[in-house]
Amino acid sequence: MDVAQLVLPQGSRLSHYLKGKGLTFVDDMMVTLSVCYHRHINGIPLDEDKLIAEILKRRHDAYKLRFKERYHHLKTQTSQTW
Image (cartoon, rainbow, N blue to C red; front, side):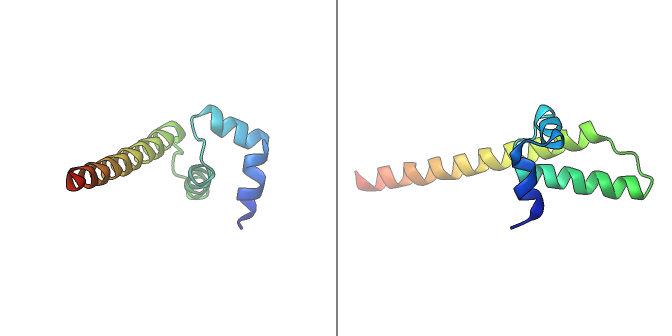
């Protein structure tokens, strides 16, 4: 288990900040921190809000795709039983 997965969900100031930005999944928090750190050490503008918006959009799109696949699977199972 990753150290961040043990620390972030416990309610640190950092996790509260990221949750306030809309990030609720620890994996999304870690991606944000990793990308921002990489940008910081390389002198690239952080664009934190844009990055978070992209991460949230990817999470939402993945959720919609999984929902669509499950709905389609259930729909085909139901039509086969009749």
